[in-house]
Length: 82
Image (cartoon, rainbow, N blue to C red; front, side, top):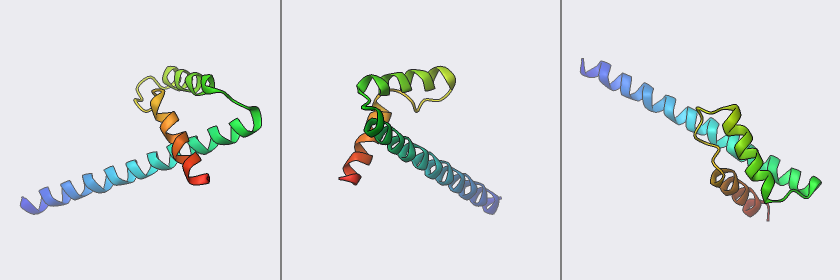
């Protein structure tokens, strides 16, 4: 039984790491998309607000689209690109 518990916990950990990795990739690409749109369209802060509202209404069960997260993502991408 001890071996089964270990394998189960290890499988859970591996799954969590994969999910987190994919979410980080998504948020990074979101930040890059926002940066690119700002360069093209001269977007203002309201765009991030609108994006946040749109995503929360489209995917209400998700918790990752409050306004601060896209802004933090954008700051990380801007910091890296400079």
